[in-house]
Length: 500
Image 1: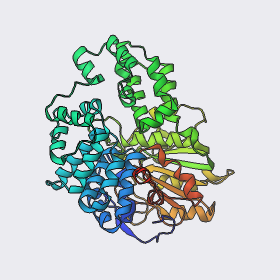
Image 2 (image 1 turned 180 degrees about the vertical axis):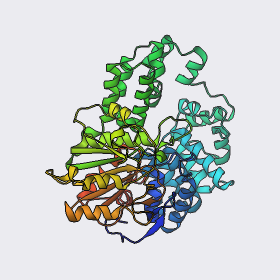
Image 3 (image 1 turned 90 degrees about the vertical axis):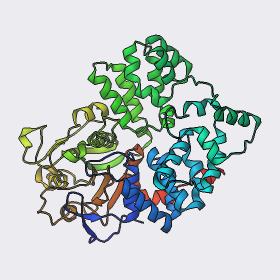
Image 4 (image 1 turned 30 degrees about the horizontal axis):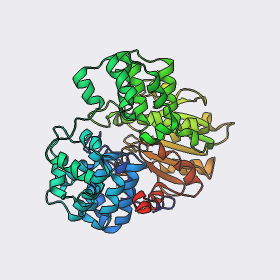
């Protein structure tokens, strides 16, 4: 469903009780899935129930789209838990897509146990026959080391339980022996960083050995970078791997993971120029292959109070951190970018503009994205999405300058401040800008929370969602009339369909 030609009259109230546009169900589902750590709270309540309800409806009305969304979320959006939920819904409501979905979503052995545990939590037993058949098949693609690594520890569902539920017929003698070891609990203890650190300690010698072994995955190296540096181990091979563009792409890391590592090291005074360069190169590896965003761009970064919520209970990354990071990344892509950080009226960063509720910044092409994010990750006050548009309409923004070609919002879209009371969305400001300055002006809304409402709609509005760097190319794609996020998912070529 296109976002280019929606009527401007589908009104609702957002979670703050203010007027907004309702998203069509397919867009709402996409935004919620691609901006959700499932099972985690958000500032304005969880979107978990929305995802299950919308996914169930989609399974009945357009199961092929739900199938592609599950695969896209796992393989492009890098949203693992949400893809597990969609796979469970498909197994329950659209069994004809169960086989292909499991084949594409299961990349690691514990994807199996997570999907089955999710299904049991949502629907109870028994498990559908289609799910059991496909799990029994894909289970055989993993070796003993992989199974032992993800066997579950104290988790409620282990691989011996999976075997007892699915009754797989081993295809080879090696697989038959592996299944016997799983059932008899005789799997060889895997050589992993978790096991080695727990038994031998977080020492230089242990980390040097682990790094040399090649058994530590990319994500583990990134998340343990602070521990590695503190241990005194040789960090050079770690940095070489972390900054390798091919390794970055294969790792499926969300951009904020690099910022999280940078902040952790900086907080403890462990940051060096070498580490900074490696993390910066890793973060920007994907940008090197993206088309630049030409013309003049206003980048609007929401740093309001509702953006202060953490993305999960196990993370110190907040939604405003993701917004600030994306703002810095997109400004790097833009030919001419002005960045507007906004909330409503509370602006702790600059007392001189405290009544305006925004701060304006310009960044050079080669300024550090990590430093920009670190200096601009703050959150407080209400949310007034009209402020960036008001800035664009002011004389100091437009006089003697080429008009803006677009605005890119990074926000939760929960406008809760007093733009003409409670009765207006911000859409009319975009219409005013088009009539006064640039009839071809675009509004791109990058939804970072998936609450299901928006402040813009209609012609030249493009809705995007997600925490992956894959959202940024949709700026140029939409303006070229090539695609939107929903259209891209509809046309997504799933690996399991192509290869099986």
